[in-house]
Image (cartoon, rainbow, N blue to C red):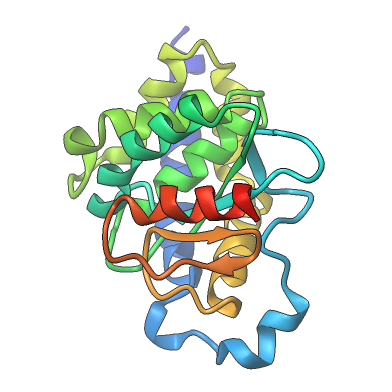
Length: 216
């Protein structure tokens, strides 16, 4: 039992070291490439994008590039959830990672969501991260807390730890961050409706864009 505990602790420590080592690899907004040169070759939605609700062919597609530690993303989360409920079957909702360097726990949170996704529990972890954002945002040891969330969700913790430590998990997060940069996303959250970036002035602008897409 003690040997197993030591192995588990070593795995977690190794994963935390990996997170610290690679966090700076995630795109920094002030170092983004010029979008005009990149966007033509970047899809707003690709085969790896996490689809929350699929309304089928021809439906408007709302994509949110988000940072789980971003306060504004946390404020938008219940708004998006309300839209998902009211436009169920009419609009496809998708999310992509865009962890910003200014948020120290953004990369660990994205890794936690992606590790959960590998066990078919992306949405559950995604929701838990936002529902409990105020508990972990800006704190030390958030990654260990995310592992606790994984345990609450009934995930295989050995597989979860392996996913967190696997460089390919970070590469998956980086894929979305690179797409956000290439598409010219200025901040989080950034929303696209049918491939067009929204310039938000008010919370209700997201719904207005959906209504216009449905009417069009």
